[in-house]
Amino acid sequence: MRTLVVLPTYNESENIETVLRRARAVVPAADILVVDDGSPDGTADIAEKVGAELGQVEVLRRAAKSGLGSAYRDGFRFGLDRDYDAFVEMDSDLSHDPDALPSLLAASEAGAELVIGSRYVPGGVTPHWPWYRLVISKGGNLYARSLLGLRVRDSTAGFRVYSRGALTSFPIDDVRAEGYGFQVEMTYRVQRAGGTITEVPIEFRDRELGTSKMSSRIVIEALLLVTWWAVRDRILRRSGPSVSH
Ligand SMILES: Nc1nc2c(ncn2[C@@H]2O[C@H](COP(=O)(O)OP(=O)(O)O)[C@@H](O)[C@H]2O)c(=O)[nH]1
Ligand SMILES: [Mg+2]
Image 1 (cartoon, rainbow, N blue to C red):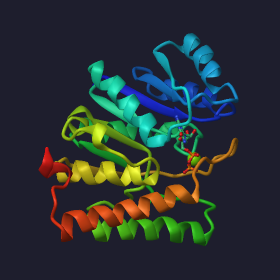
Image 2: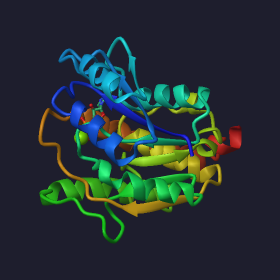
Image 3: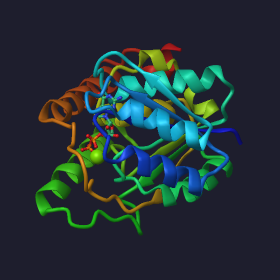
Image 4: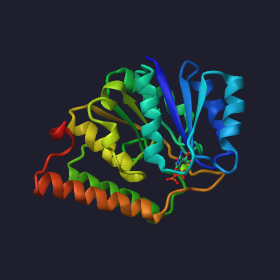
């Protein structure tokens, strides 16, 4: 299985070197693509320097901060053009432990079109989260699951493996969402295209260095989009993702 690990970065100068080294140590055969949005803190330069030492690392430099979803779409297109079989989505802030990569990739190799590193299946944990964060995250998941009929517990999770088949079963250029909405939209589209989805438990850790780029705007985007998709596909019954293509 030719594997591409896509790492989106915006101001991750304190984390990117560790992420690259640990990912390489755990899955030495996988190639890595860093998608950086002109981070003012020099993340792309660090990634290039460490990447040159490690090998099999490319850095895609984009001019301006354009969102997580758009970074992944560019990363996936890069990999689809180069015949990769498996595409890993992983944050570059060490919230997603590179040590979990082998178990996620094993589920992908076993045939799942989408593997989700899940906080909300037995064995999944979010240590140190205050109650209100859990309520927002689980509430968002419950909302998306019930409105869209998703069959997964953690549709907002961002630690994933897609098969090539999953990413070619619908036009990824049509995916519009940027933040948590991107994760939900990708889950919804894979499910509607008939792809099998497996959840593997993970420990989601809070970042220790650098700052989060997520904002309330991103949460509101996700809520509005989920509501719109449900209205479109369940009430208006207009063509949903898998019907129109
Ligand atoms: N290329 C790119 N990466 C981004 C952007 N926004 C966030 N990221 C990266 O996406 C990952 C997750 O973002 P983060 O801020 O940690 O979100 P949180 O975990 O939900 O707080 C990190 O690796 C960020 O550096 C963006 O606009 N462009
Ligand atoms: Mg994070």
